[in-house]
Image 1 (tube, rainbow, N blue to C red):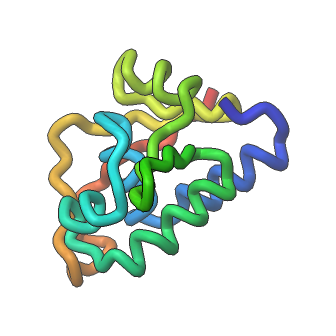
Image 2: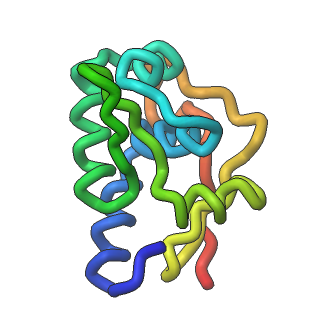
Length: 122
C-alpha cells in the first residue's frame, strides 16, 4: 500500500498506461515471467520489460529470481488486498479490476480497448 502522497503520484503515473494496468491485472492471479506476460498480452518482450521496470520503480512489483529466470509479482500487501476482490488499493485511491475484461489486442487503438480498471476515490 502506498503511504506518502509522492508515492501515490508515482504509482498513479505508473498505472497511467493501459499496458501496465493490464500487466497488474495479470499479476493479481499469479507471478509471471516476461515471456508469459508477453504472450498473454500480445506485446513484445522488450516492451513488457520496459513496463515492468516502471511498475517496479513505482513500488508496485517485486522480482523473484530463480536462476536466470525472473518472476514478477505484486508485493504481498497489495496481493492480499487484490485477492479480496480484484481491487488494487494504493491507500490514496483504489482500482477495481473487471473479472471478464479480455486483454486488448496488439495494435488496437487505446480508446477501442476495454477498460481493465476503474479508479475509485476514497
